[in-house]
View: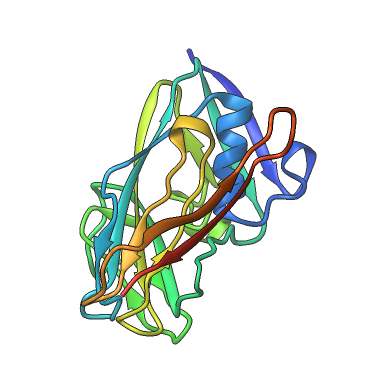
Length: 204
């Protein structure tokens, strides 16, 4: 039988956690979780009819279940900001029109077959009788899907989280825009001194 570890968002080692970024970084640094990007950079309009959709996989390689408790919604941040987003976890019991849907800010519901809305609170846990909000089972792989809605279809949106080799750093490129380019304008270095690098980052 697998052992058990737990993390309560807002207390203990997770006392300062308010975002999904912070939650997954803590899972990586404290429990050895790994994260794999399944989508990469994509071009999307980010409208309700054609939202930006990215998938990633989280691996719990340990011999114990890791349970998440959270009173408040764990949020995700974007740069620049977007209109709204929804996070889903793979669940073959769900339909696109049932109770597994996510509530958006404007009151609209959005759902996908085989995906369940999740924000790591009691509201989105899989069964009411469960004490924990979400469990990462021992030696498990869990697929997540992030659905985003832009303020403008031409916006280039950056989001990401993780540490070391498992860092996710994808772009949601605007329709009709090119990938950002990085042009180094000056590099100066002296032995024993700080390295100063200035660069221009841009896109069309």
